[in-house]
Image (cartoon, rainbow, N blue to C red; front, side, top):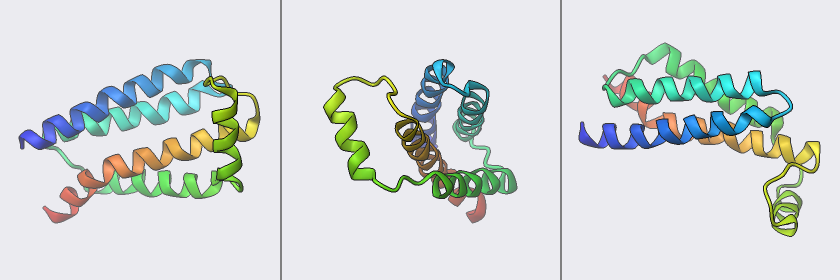
Length: 120
């Protein structure tokens, strides 16, 4: 139980920060909402609550979104990020690549909660 509190507590804080950083995004209402949903499920995980159907839907939707946005040239994107030496968005492709990995991070972070929900 202590592991759940620490693991999901850390992710709740991280997703809250991710939501905050989305306010300067071209479409903040979408991405702030997505990260807030992740915060809510992490806070539920801290309390030991793992709602099976909603968690399943969120993880599947995040994975489908990541597949939809999946970048054609991840290597090119990483090279661009390293070359510019800052985190400002220069191209639409950079934004979509970041969103792809944000969705993957949510799916991965919520997977232990999903596993616990289906195990129970």
